[in-house]
Amino acid sequence: MPGIDGLTPPRLTIELVPSTCWFSNVRSEVTPEMWTRIKRMAYRKAHYRCEICNGVGPKWPVECHEKWQYHDQKRIQSLTDMLALCPACHEVKHIGLAESRGRVNEALAHLAKVNEWSLADARYYAEGAFELWAQRSLHVWTLDISMLNKLGVVPQARAS
Image (cartoon, rainbow, N blue to C red; front, side):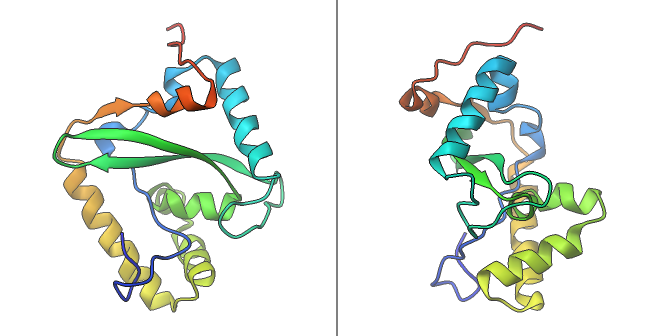
């Protein structure tokens, strides 16, 4: 998604997962031990700092974020990276969850601060992200987590 001016990509973006993909992610496709291994790899790669703002959280330094690419015509949700993000940047990525928790204003303020935008620009950008989310949520997506193979991780479905 481009920046507010259509030219400069923002440092921090909103990445709303289509509602038809909720609960279908890396964590749901691997064992708890494998998930712990993946998270630790992401944290170490980033030296336990946020890969976007270089900050850390007040309770724990970083959280693991799954970065997805959506192939809209083929309806494929492909994992492209595992990122270490501070809790504030991670909350922006999942601003819909922040909204449901009553924290949307905090998330928008962080989005504006990191991208050096006004709060009005952050709200405008978020509206566009929600419109894209609504369109993508009309469809069922195929999950592609084959990128984990590049990390030396072979996904094994967890026991039900």
